[in-house]
Image (cartoon, rainbow, N blue to C red; front, side):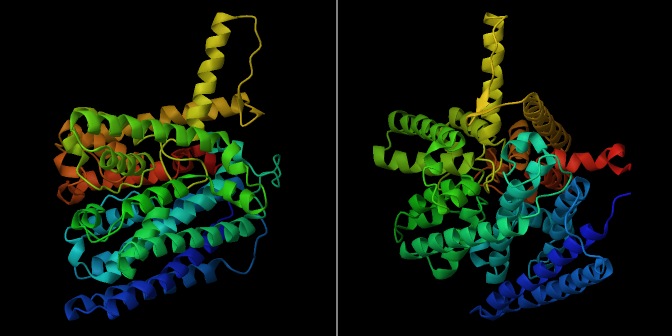
Amino acid sequence: MINFRPVILVIGALTAALGGLMLLPLLADLTASDPYLRQNWSAFAAGSLLCVFAGLGLFATASGGGFETMTVRQGFLITTLSWVVLVLFASVPFMLGLYKMSFTDAFFEAMSGLTTTGATVIIGLDDAPPGLLLWRSMLQWLGGIGIVIMAIAILPMLSVGGMQLFRLESSDKNSDKILPGASQIAAAITGLYVFFTALCAMLYWGMGMTAFDAVNHAMTTIATGGFSTKDASFGYFLDSGDYGPVDVVAAAFMIVGSLPFGIYLLAMRGRINALFTDSQVRFFLMIASASIVVILLRLFYLYEIDLFTAFRLSAFNVISIMTGTGYASTDYGLWGAFAYGFFFCIMFVGGCAGSTSCGLKIFRLQVALAALTVYGKRLIFPHGVFIAHYNGRALTDDVFISVLSFFFVYFAGFATVAVILSLFGLDPVTALSAAGSAIANVGPGLGDIVGPSGNYESLPTGAKWVLSAGMLLGRLEFFTVLVLFAPSFWRR
């Protein structure tokens, strides 16, 4: 049998910590200038008490034995259950606040936040209580740091979708235990994450944003989440003419969030060249650059937009969609059918492994291309011996199988979600793009309903639950969740 004590202990500690963090949006509401908005503080007070008491209760129930390491099965349980439990508790302030959101909408919004998806059901963000806006941003910020730590310290041990490629050198490759030094890794990454967030906020503030808007957007930018304090997203700041080039700052830090944080740690230890020699980083920048040029040329030649404006529009929106951030500076749905199809394709690409970004991940595309190349060479030279490499390391068959299996499950999951959404009466564009957006954790889809100028609020209740499940599956790399439904997982 699985020892559930470590699982309950970790989830209890995380739940209590979430309750403590609710005090920050509570204070934001108490300091609101509008007396009506100030009333929203009680929702966070109630939510905080509930989280702290529930979390401490779970922690007290499981404490006493202590544990040094964690088995792989416990790792799978903690990864999935902690995300679901935290989403449930994070949705409480949405239900109790001034908007009185239904449980479905509150759960959807919290899931979208913690998975850094960026899809929203809230209309009227410009006039929303400051605590609610801050809470949405905090959820994405927490989800971003959580997925980075999970990708570096946990998923390689679980060998999910080829992530064993990133097993740290200090880990025991033959052990059934999660990396013992996970706490040290988490502390180093958290410090780096906070630094990038603070730097981004200062630059936003220097470009004319209020301190509140700057902090909120910094959190959702570095987390590649995409929640904004404005209904028009970044279009609000670019259309008014009162702000500096905030889109340039956003594009730069979306890229920062999409690069491997493990590479940053190596750079901090003196290996600066790691940022420039890593094949995953180079491939990511190559795809991003090529995609920007494609959209830039289309805007410049077909829509007669001046070159500088075309570059800013293409760079910001391509990076936002490709990294899964989901910000929008304009309604790119007006750029024609080609832009529709192009953005739909690049939303699946994602960023690098070990980043806050989502999607398929760059390294999996590289492994798939390496597999195709080797297969092609073997067809041409049947007696030849060819070995695929990644970052100078030979790729083994278990990596190929893991990655190609992930591709199959990923797109099978996308197709399943799209078909189910169509059963709710959604048109093909909405069903396909909403499914892709949820699985790839992008946020906005395509079309009038869920596009960059739309909102998920009008979708049927059942569709929102399906999309919530899609967000969780996409964020946790599918196998981390699906393995829990295998009967063999629960056997000794």
